[in-house]
Image (cartoon, rainbow, N blue to C red; front, side, top):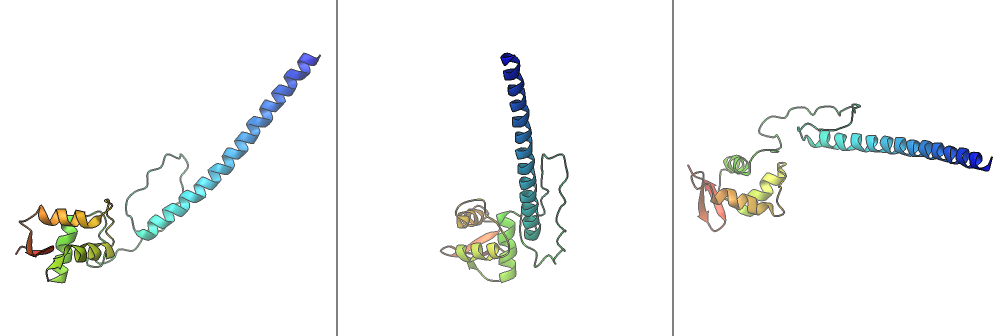
Length: 144
């Protein structure tokens, strides 16, 4: 009889533990879904424009799409540093230093992937002499 009681008690403990684990996982799922929705909303506000890939089988509602801005005032996300520099120099109409260019394209929404974004700008300027002409130390203009 003791053996049977021990076995039943162990089975009950397993069921209780499994139910507790299931409940904890459901709570965690709810928390993670709300966190994902907050991240997607923030990305929507930033205008990332890139699709969000997720492994979840249930769909999570996306935030409202951002209205399209005119090309001249649109943030310059996803473009190459070279294209961003060309656009900035055209708009300024004057030679600019590497620091000025870096700040200008960052103000317009460019996100650098390197720790020091001015190095990216410097490399783009120096590796494309057909497009950019050096007018003074660390100062460049469009090569017209």
